[in-house]
Figure 1 (cartoon, rainbow, N blue to C red):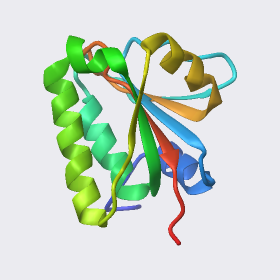
Figure 2: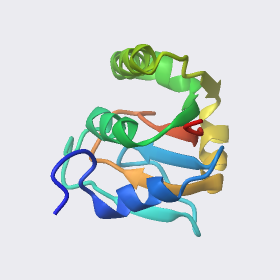
Figure 3: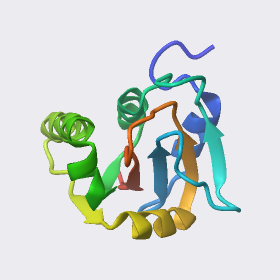
Figure 4: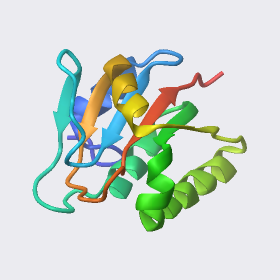
Length: 139
């Protein structure tokens, strides 16, 4: 049994297979998941697990090139957005390099999820609490 880091075997496996620029999306409970994209459904009930907790778990395992967020996230759910940006800034400082944040309209964010290797559904009930991680390389 794995005792540290990301314990979900399906999610850990997906991250281990990602190549440079491959996309992995972590979403709230309501984001539509396109047909043909692998769904990793972690949602148990409202808020469990939270979006931020899953983001932090993914960050422990994944090398990043950049992230993508919906523009609407900043205005509609500013508290959660600011919390996420704080997590990303702390991660950037810890890694010693910037994590670029790209914003797109929500309609385009949803279209872009078709390119994700997998989408991880959380129990988050906050509108627009979605992020797409673009994989980086460790060298």
